[in-house]
Image 1 (cartoon, helix red, strand yellow):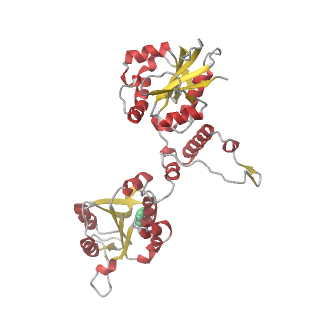
Image 2 (tube, helix red, strand yellow):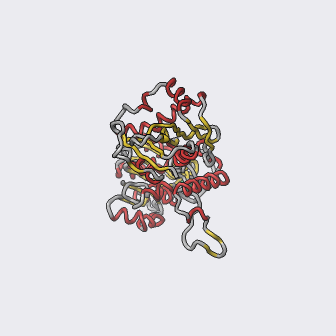
Image 3 (cartoon, protein in one colour):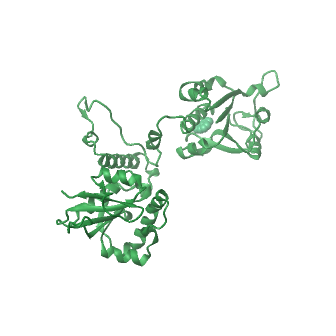
Length: 390
Ligand code: ADE
């Protein structure tokens, strides 16, 4: 990515050569160029500002130095010109992600009362323009804002940070503030790390972290909360025919990934009709979880003859799923646990099928005590997993 900065205080941008952006520049990922705007002035005092037309306090930055800078830098449709200004669009993680996808950013850094509007209009005629504010306060100039924007954007570039997962889990990714974090020692000055984090139960840890993130967001930034995040608590209830539409919508959303992973469209869940889904609710023990009214997970179970010739009857589990936007928070695991916990006491073994290429599912079920059963018959394209009930 190429980054240009037009400023009358080039030294202010020295941090760009330090730390991670500096390293990225050395490795060739970034091409960073800081320009002294005064090089495009022609008078003895190297003047960049003048009084505002129409009167008023302060000085306005003249258009000519910017115009000449644009000509020399060569703006085009692949360039995004960023004007940092308190009257711009608020800078957010989403905007950082958007900017990280652009090829080239040219930052125009104003001082005084701002930049002549024609500079912005002119840039907008040849390139994309973003006017961005760091927040609802006034800085002395745009340099600090440009540094902040640069850091937030550059760390999202592929190959910049080693650990993509740490990016994904941070504050504002997913629209929530980050949950509190702890490291060793487990006890310090009479303050203990929450016991759930010491237990190694990843489902419980994920649920705890999500719940803390939602609580923190509700307290500090209620404006960020969307109803879909209110999933800290869920309850499983037997499904009723009136749930059919929502169940069908959720299943189709969840099983499209399965169809892609297995390169197969002939998956029953994608083909069955509304009437079939409605009738199956009664033919199985079907469970749905709701959170603040929204149907967010399902699972179902019924008797089946054991396929191993033992004459036993096993509990067949199916349609274990959690809404795509809420995955990774222990909801799918809660659905699986619920359908096992509510199986008839006489059931000796749980059995289920999943796509033979659904590797995430294989890992999920193995983590939850199931094992693959290639020794037993299953439909083409699927694998069977079983678990002895304790
Ligand atoms: N320049 C001055 N104040 C600013 C702000 N809040 N955001 C971006 N640029 C600015």
